Image (cartoon, rainbow, N blue to C red; front, side):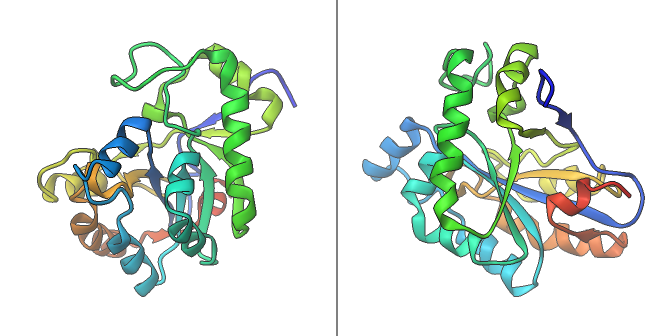
Length: 226
């Protein structure tokens, strides 16, 4: 199995497939905001509506706490054969220092945190994977070594939409379409209150991909050898 989890940014640069990935973050602070009524939702159902309506494949990197907060939405994702499920930690904590002001945990808790998240996701079935994404994409040698026993592949991405806390949809479309290529892994978020423009940008992103002859596919297909 090796001593270090592999990291990938994209798939082969051949063909026409690209991966649309959506992170589902959830911290204790976000849960507190929901309970206090400061925010309405961290589950953007308009994204799911559009992907389902247009029969678009996507991969969702789920935090365990998001799954537990939105079991019905998780079931909806799992029940769609075009969607894949992946791991984004249990509570969106960072395991390196200075990672976008995220709450942090010691690296020796990483493997247990990720394993727990797989167990939370497992009962939902569907197209489950051993893909994992670090919150904030923050990782180092120690964190990759810690993940080795779990047999995961760490997926960063080569196209960052910049949708967290965006106040307009146009820059998100440009950020994706200016950089997307065959084999690209696009990073977006399904956390509505923290990424309110994603559902408005997505139709334009899908149209731009079609114009470029690019086809969204499940992450496993995009990363597969050509």
